[in-house]
Amino acid sequence: MRICECHSIRGEFDADAHSRCYENTTKQESVRMNDRTLYAKIISPENLRRAFVYASAERQKDHFYDPLEIKWYRAHEQELISELHETLQDPGNYEQESSFAYFPPKNRVCYRRMVFIPMRDLVVRYAFVSVIADQLDGRLSDRCFSNRRAKGDRAKYFLLEDYARGPWQNFVDWQKSAASNHKFMLKTDISSFYDSVSHKYLEDVLRSELKLPQNSKVVSLFQKILKVNIESYSHLDNSIQQPARLHQGLPIGNNTEGFLANLYLMEIDRKMAKAGVEFGRYTDDMRMYAKDIATLRKAIMILQESLLKLGLNLNSSKTKLGGNPKELEEMRSKDNEIYGYLDPVELEKENQLLPLADKGFRDQPKLFTEKTGFEDEDDAAKFCKYISWLVSPGKKPFTKVNKLRVWHVERLGEIIRRYAGAGKHASWLLVMATFYDDVPQTVSNRAFQMITELLTDKQVNTYSRYRLTHFIISKGSFRFHNSMWIDFFPDETKEWLKKVCVSFLKEPAIELNLVAIHAFKVLGLSFDEIKTLVETHSIQPLASPAQNALNWLEDQTTQEEAEHIDLTFVDEDVDYI
Image (tube, rainbow, N blue to C red; front, side, top):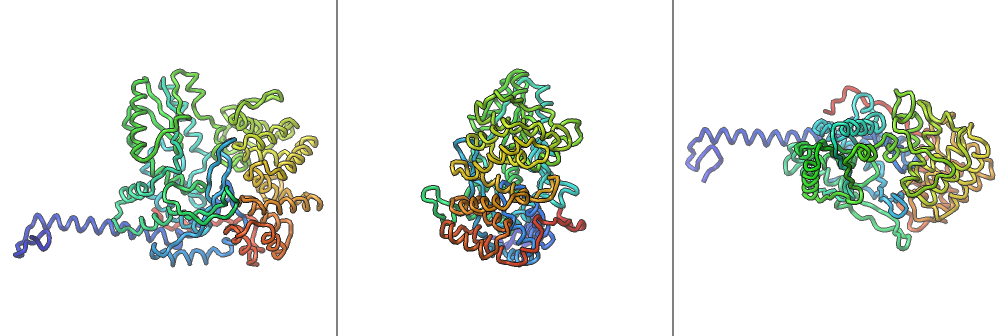
């Protein structure tokens, strides 16, 4: 029996044991110091302020956002930072507010659950992930192309690199190079990846990579962040369901989850680097190249075995094998497929994909004529890419909108009605065809008529109707003016839109509820008028995001804020690394 490693019960000194005891004590103290240092950085006012900038900037590029929320928090930024800094002194004090689920269509049949996280909790997520990304991004494989930590000036505004200014094109170019040196290719992805992520495994990755102790404050906060409370409308009876806590999976809908997804697949990258193939991925969209089929098949087994250990599996319906140059060319990613990852407005406003090229996309999209029909959902997405290429063929966007024809508009309407997976892109193109000056008048008239038909048709999915309304009532620096399209509406059209938005309040879709409230404000209604409309026509009890929107409107400081947040630089001398 020993009192400690270096003294026996009789007090005899053991020099070797003393050395081991000292080393263990030093290591334990180093681990505790690392945890304290990281946690202090995460909750520091400087980092919370940086996280606020990230959350505000990237929120406006999300599939859905509420401008009223951003404006309110812009006016109360310092209060939020002070409150979070105080609350987060002990991670046990932090409790998330209710998030809300909405369901953009994935294709004609299925919907993708996305989660709208309140701004307060979004700031905490960005504060946490930005510090973790500063520590761990350098350990990711150079063949992990997506969701990488932003560098330089961009890191002052955004957590991650710009999709279109490097990562996606690098992924495309890597595939071209790999195909030229290999005969065989595997294209695959992971089935329901984000929904299948194990919180426990992700915590273990963090603890292992950062050498954190068992009682880590960093891990304790991470556990709180992962367990999102998700409120939603019931698809059975349209009522508001009580918030359900997320015990598995990452909530789709903001950029922090993309970096966490990379951490989850870090071990997969390391194993595949030793599998004798060229392996690369864009999140869970994976490619594998080999010189012979035997090597490729063995690597596939290694990949599947490794994924199963993480509770994941390959998506068999999206797994394809290529064995000749034609197949490899058809299967590789194309640069114009970036529309599947990025908001088309953000991409087109600067034609960001190839800013140094003489023309837009290197990979010309499929061309369509008036007689070319849609065979499937994929053709609908390709048609939207074709229209974008048609009107923005060079570095300057929208220089050829005069090429639009009535049949183009008819096809866009068909996509929104029948091929909802491409509805987000089609909605933007339809609004562009309605309002841009150089669009032929007959085309513009038909496009506006199409919008009025779609907004009043409840058979059209709620997300597409939200996007159409959002584009009409929002400002945008990408336009030839900085006004809202609604500013050009005559009074009778504004009254019509008000009635449409009243009908939106009655639907079990949070994106329609919130865009209606925002539209009422843009249309000039008073707070009392808006409150009466919401309380009279909305499903009761009121969804928490709608109640929050009313609260923000009631605060008069919101009325004086600019439509879009005025981003400011974070102090450059703050050390986050």
